[in-house]
Length: 500
Image (tube, rainbow, N blue to C red):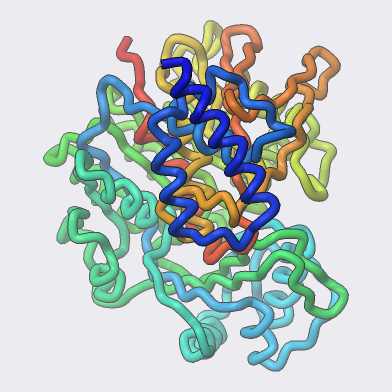
């Protein structure tokens, strides 16, 4: 069998070199060659293909195919709630120009109260290439902007809301039955996968609309330029903002009997004001607490700006009651800032999130708020962190298995979904992660060198395991919204919780 492995490795080297010299190599031919190589991917991995000679992207893609295996016990029934809407996706700069707005200086706003606030917040986050989501307080003005967006040339309508997007991704796997509970209007119901079960109690007469302003890598408006592709989201969404269907969601679990619960939408309450969110968050915690302990809960976080609200979620209310969380670099840093954690003095990442600093914050979260000797009542034992260039899965030892597969599957779907392809297209992706990095910025971490033929780097801190893999970043992404939800969904599908 060694000669087959050698030939496969030689073919991988040749094709990798040819991809680099001939990027116009037809997609059909690429996929044909890929299908020839795939059965030998494990052997290519074992030969440690030299990353400087072969295409690192090809080597990583093949190695993932060998590493990604389904867990021994797969989830078959997953309940997802509670935010759902219709997304209207448009080019951000084009829409703002259509609204007769002129470029200027960027400035962040916790709540948008005018078109000027919208423009400034968009420019602020566009210049950083960072995803963000904000509440637009003026309902009448929001409806005018929404009409302009829906009529804008090239505007597209999609399933929206973290819960609905996660449900859509999970429902594409035939072994999974998905229950989705959220404010589902007629347009959203029409867009949802036919395999998704929607409780009648969560159907409503009108849809909630979210506007997704996308921008491309290098796109300019005035003096602002995007370092990478991303999006800015805003809405005037009362149903999701008040989490109106949370109790309906929890009540439906008794009959559905899920093996896993995925919860999202807490960020939507932030825009309702302190008096509303304090009261509603207390009710939300009571509802979550009624879910049987034997059913694991994954919480998907999203963009927030109110430190008091984040502190209530993290310290006192929700985080200790869930088993797993998913978040990106903006949310990770905000958790640390709200709780005075490691590197909380940073105002933003200013580009590439440093792996050592990210690792320090992740370790602090799971030690501070996760299950352990001092927090035996807490349930948190897993964090799935995703950013443009890499993903890290962090688990408390003894609670989760198959996490090498899980982090690889999450990274793989980031590359395929962003480019709109079924498989990784080597000619359309690139590596952004550094080949050498520190696993901690505290001075105690060692340096690691990325090995493309074994692309999941694993290290240990006390009783906590870290699993890192690079992302094959799409050069010209077709759509960025929902990418984090797809990543978390795929990671969960390949994860197995160890029963205690």
